[in-house]
Length: 188
Length: 265
Image 1: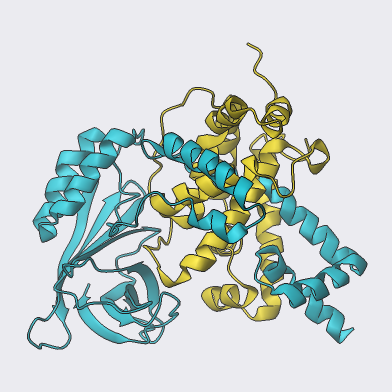
Image 2 (image 1 turned 90 degrees about the horizontal axis):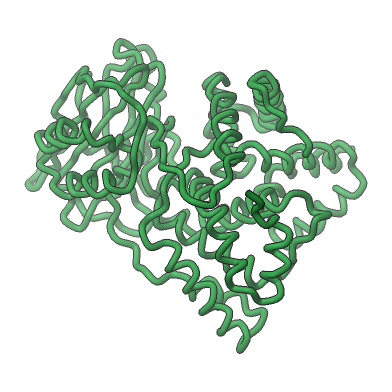
């Protein structure tokens, strides 16, 4: 089965093809939503992030080009930045906080979704699960909650000067685990 | 060199978008000359190929596609009229209002677990809303985990100040496989203002001065509140008190506000 490539769909989208936007939406809806939900921990806010991401995709202020790497990476970077933006705005309206994630809620496959996404997801989640608790925590605070340097220090009880080193260490372990889990994850 | 180090220390805030316009500009000038920061930033940017996949695949809410496409194409029309007006964009994308949230998003929703879980939750606080949420979620999500929940401990939280209309609450500690979830239900909570929240704390017998924050929630209009949180490696011997405090905002690292409910464990 030959699916149109992301880049081709994106080109059509830039030329005003609504169907191309819809095709990209179908392909990435669940990934973008799941990531936004992981960051915001709020289904409504996650949906707002998804909407904002696709609005930005349709009205690009800084359009995608293949020099920027994979389309999916670019889209996810936009998702993360948008979610962080929303989290900052929502800082006054906190929702429930989870110390650790609850049991997985495997969602049913949706049509048009990439198999690659599912495999990557299983691999990365296994790798993250193998991290020590404090390493998971610092990645959570640093990457998913996008806290300031100072807040990470307060939340972890680490001196300010130690935070970056601990992030580095946690990421190093993560990378080792990913490689061990059979990831051909680095460098497409 | 001192200023250089100070700049390097701003990398996290730069990456997470916390620097103001001028700070950002100054940092970017530093970045141009600091290979150490460049390398680290490149590594962090590359995480986008990995860490987003640490998200549980969740099924988006029903109708999200229609709402999103409508927002995108509606935005398209407005942006033709007012191009480059970003503040307009963010306002136009919310076709729904924020309903009061019941924090049940991550509660397991496998159908066969539901009757037991729902009955269990109902028995705690008669929280019908929560029950409805669970039912609703069960139609949206399927789940593969097959475990049996086991109630490890159930305590009634006592109000610290016994005024009229004192709050009431319960805490249940439930084991599910290797994880332990704590379910708190509270009622007759007073109204919250501005950024105020309720927070749950676990206090160790050995170090009562350093309570661990376990969860944060807001009350509904009717003064009810529920929070579910999961802990790995939960050792029931470790904790001897659970408490709920009324906090000025969600950032409290230790209880700053008044403790309203507590129980020994």
